[in-house]
Image 1 (cartoon, helix red, strand yellow):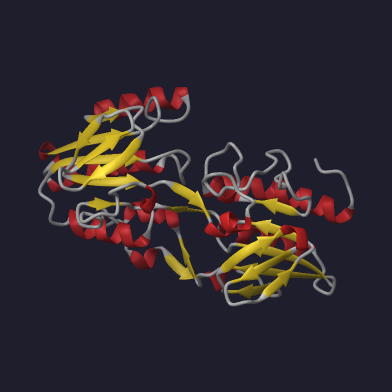
Image 2 (spheres, rainbow, N blue to C red):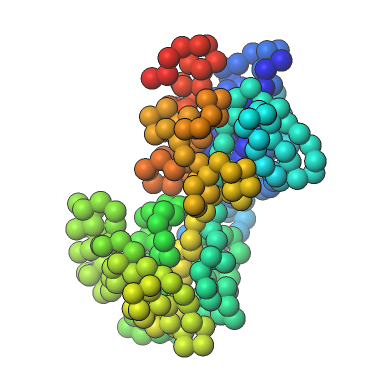
Length: 324
């Protein structure tokens, strides 16, 4: 029996498990998904938790709800991939062989990569909203905050869902208006980009909207460190921005298993052919979603479109046909 192994049970891994289950005969193919967590988090919903629009239970469900019958699920941590041996080693010692491997291990926030970020103020006056823990902690903080300087900072490119920080400051503006304290809150949007967004036309429109809502933009700010004592963020070129409340998109990196496997770039993203979504190094490995280094946004919508390309090309590889 031939084996397809899917690493990661997030959006990409779940889509591929469902697509492949419908397309392949179970008496010929074994499809296995490996993911260390049993809980599915609806990550776009994290954005709404700080403002009381969603709560924790609106964004969690068992991952088993989304996997089709006939697909084998292993809730285990991945140790490393050994491409030359067509196998994956799991943390518990189990060894999984594969004929084709799909890497869909996503990206994760790494606040530990920025000096001072996880200091004494972490989850007290410094928060992320890209984790369930950070979003909940921020929601508790905002219930009693009376105002000051709110800084929304993007530490580094790339990161999950490029529009989310903009959505955050717009939601914050509405939230503080409703609370009757908008005049007591200064909002700054601090970004490594040259403007509000990645695309010129969108940047022009969004910049106007930010100005209209009295949200200050600090462009080309590359975060070097966070000073907890002085409550400032500092860039590599010496710029400093003070804060009373810091919300941050930390450095994003690929799964550490990619680093241990020696198949990633400096940020642990897998070098991937952007046309076929096949690994640049190994013909029987495909990469989907945030785990890859393709020049697209790291977002669920991109994964949905990319899964169609990956599925067609994987089926072509299985059939011995040229990839499109």
